[in-house]
Image (cartoon, rainbow, N blue to C red; front, side):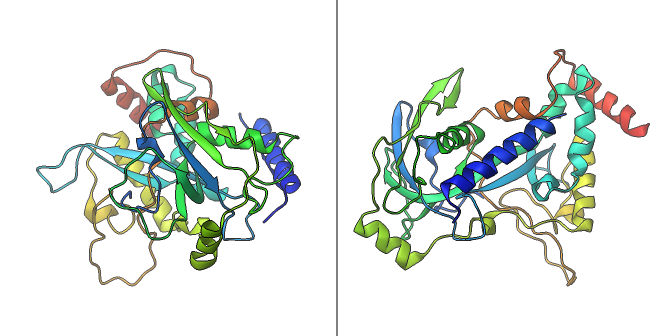
Amino acid sequence: MATLAEIRAKLQAQENKGSKSSTSGGDNAIFPFWNIPEQSTAVLRFLPDGNESNSFFWVERLMIRLPFSGIKGDSDSRNTFVQVPCMEMWNETCPVLTEVRTWFKDPALEDMGRKYWKKRSYIFQGFVLDSPLAEDTVPENPVRRFIIGPQIFQLLKAALMDPELEELPTDYTSGLDFRLTKTTKGGYADYSTSTWARRERALDKAETEAVSQYGLFDLSSFLPNKPDETAVNVIKEMFEVSVDGGQYDPEAFGQYFRPAGMYKPQTDSTSSKAEATTTAPAPKEEKQEETVVSETPQSSGGGSKAEDILATIRARQSQ
């Protein structure tokens, strides 16, 4: 685990780099904090990553949501979507964003661009010390995982950069608890009043024993597998079908990426293929547009009907 100074230095380096280049859900180990009642607070304690090579106590995940008008061959299917990993998660070119970035030069395509833009989230782990949420089932292992959106992450990051913070919040003896408070703003969940505790607190005996007994998760193991060249081509093909308003094709795509709840089709092939992503979705109640606005070219307003937008996109692709 890196020191606080090393984390600050790395965060600052990422911030500088960003400013220069800015041109499953059934896993009950994940604490669904987004379901806590409004005007309530859950108290969490973050823990280090089990992967000691990770300088941070979180990992970043970049996903793209591809909507489809249904599932091919299923007459009862409704609109569905498939999450695919964004290749920028591995600092490689993403075939979806390569196309989508150009859309922001055209006001008529901006809304469509936001729909296909990457969604950023962060995976943490730790204890749930106090919660207003009545969960149906609680895992035996009290070390839970948290899927954190950009709004909460910025609060965590700002605190780490505070020069008055002397120890890592994950320190076993001098760490800090985090009070995650949910309110509403503009019809969306808002967590901006969440804060770190003012006093340091050492892990108690039960918490220390839990870490010793169950260990810490390697957070990177909850990221999707890196797609190989074939899978990247499948992502590009799925994206084109999605933009055209087509249906998801299980025969063509099922070996690679699938809607949540769909099983992988049986095959005699023994070739290595990228598995469908089954990691937990980002909190649904956070306003996803906040992420898009901060990372995509500035909006210049305007809008069009879906048919007109699709026609414009097809024209651009044909050129």
